[in-house]
Image (cartoon, rainbow, N blue to C red; front, side, top):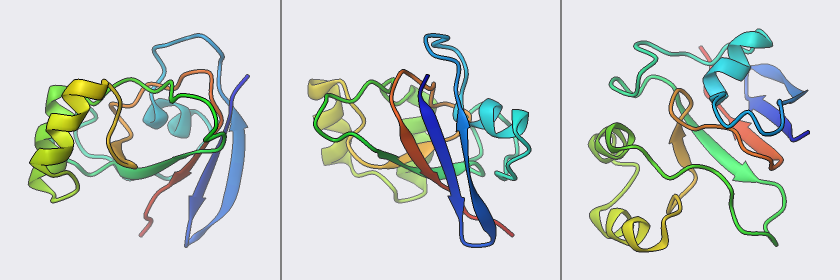
Length: 120
């Protein structure tokens, strides 16, 4: 089971277990299930409210996270969190080019993660 640690400057860090192999549960769904206050608006990748930083704990193995969705690419570009060069590189490498993700779009895989989220 992967462990996911949620970290925020205004809340105590919380580590939870994700269901290994579900390949459907998003960071936002896991956060809501464990009462972790990640802000979100639409929940479908359109608004960018659920912007988080995702850090892999084991950097020695290839990343397992799903590539950015088209909506996620558009929103991250609008927010200035991804460049066209990074988008082009992602198309070749098939992996996320940086740590920024939308919690409602990133599906949790079988890897331990640190999720940094802002809080109000």
